[in-house]
Figure 1 (cartoon, helix red, strand yellow):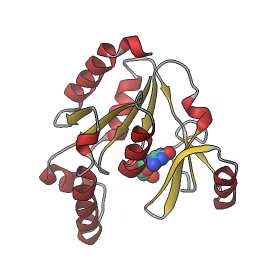
Figure 2 (cartoon, helix red, strand yellow):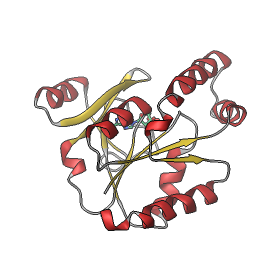
Figure 3 (cartoon, rainbow, N blue to C red):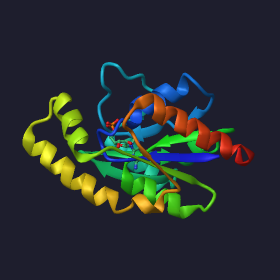
Length: 177
Ligand code: 5GP
C-alpha cells in the first residue's frame, strides 16, 4: 500500500513519521533532492542528495513519478521507491502529494494539519523571521484548499495521539498491503 503523507511545513510530518517508524514496520520512500544535506541527515536514508544535473537526467529518463520545486530546491519520488514491498510511506509537500494521489486511485492520502496559532509558534521555534512565517502561513492557506482530496485528516495536537490514530488507519487498511 502506498500511503502519501502531506501537510503544511511545520505541522510535524517528520516527527510523526519518525515516531511511526519506532512502532510499526514500513518502507520509507526515499526522495531525491537537490537540497544540501543537513548535518543530522544520512544520504540514502533521509534523501538521495543529488546535483541539479543528476536531477535533470532523472527527469529526462522518466525515472520520477512526481517532482516539485520547494524552498529553492527540487524534490522528487523515483519510480523505484514505489516498487518497495508492503506498506510504503511517502513524505511529500502538498502539490506533489495531491498530483500523485490523483494519479492512482489505489494510493491513500493523509493530510496532517495544526491550527494557525500553533503553526506560527512552531515556525518561530525553528528560528524563522516574521516575513518568512507570513509567507509560509499564506502557503499553508493555499495548501489547505487540497485537504479534502485526501482520504484521512489528522489534527496534530498531540504527537502520540496522532501516531496512534495513523496506526489505526493503517491497520484498518491492512488488506491492501
Ligand atoms: P525538507 O527540505 O524540509 O526535508 O522538505 C521540504 C518539503 O519537501 C517537505 O514538505 C517534504 O515533505 C517535501 N518533500 C520531500 N520529498 C519530496 C518529494 O519527493 N516530492 C515532493 N513533492 N515533496 C517532497
